[in-house]
Length: 258
Ligand SMILES: C[S@@+](CC[C@H](N)C(=O)[O-])C[C@H]1O[C@@H](n2cnc3c(N)ncnc32)[C@H](O)[C@@H]1O
Image (cartoon, rainbow, N blue to C red; front, side, top):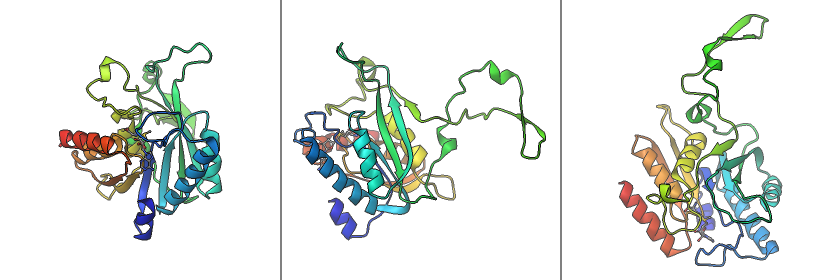
C-alpha cells in the first residue's frame, strides 16, 4: 500500500503514527512479536518509504517505546531525515503492579523533518496554561536587542509549550466512553493537539494538508482530523490498517462523530 502510493506520486505533509512497538501486544497478527533484528529491518524499510512519501517540508511524528526508541532514532538519522525533537507523551493514570522496575509513565515520540530548513510547527496553536498565576501579576522586564528596557506581558493564550505532552491514557472508568477494544488506542486529546501542532495551514489560518497514519488501529488519527474538519478545517487524510476488525471500529467511530 505504501509502495503503491509512492508509485502514484502521492506526498504527505505529515506522517503521524503509532506503529507496533514490538511489545508482544495482540493486534490479531504477529506484527508486535518480531525477533529484534526483523523488527529493526521492517522499521528501517517503513521509515525509508515514509521519508519518500513526504512533501519537501513534511514531517514524521513516530511513536515508540523507551526500550527501542534509540534504535529508531538511529534509523531516522541514517534515512537522511532531520532531527527536530524527541518528545515525551507523559501520563500518570497508567496501570502497573510490577515491583521489578519503575512503572512506565511515558512514551517517547520522535519528530523528524524532511528538510533541514523548513517544516511546520504551529507553536501558537498548542500553548499551555502558565504554571504560576502569581508571577504574572507583576510586570517582568528584560533587556532588548538595543539595550532598551522592555516589559514582557503574558500571552492571553498561555505559555509556549514544552516537549513533554501530558494527556491521560484511556485507562479507567473516566475514559470508558472513548475506549474501544483496540489494545493500544491513543487518546483523542493527544492526537488532536499533535495535528494542531504539525499540520500546515492555509492562508485563512485553517489546517490544510494531507496526513498519513500507516498503522491506523482504531482510527484515532482520522477521527481527530474529522473532528477538526467539523470546526471548519480542511484536512485530508489516509489511514492504513491491516486488521479488518480495527478498520470496522475506526469506521464506527468516524460515523459516530458525523
Ligand atoms: C499501536 S497500534 C495503533 C493504534 C492507533 N494509533 C489507535 O489509536 O488506535 C498499531 C496498529 O498497526 C497495525 N499493523 C501492524 N502491521 C501493519 C501493517 N503491516 N500494515 C498496516 N497496519 C499494521 C496493527 O494491527 C495495530 O492495529
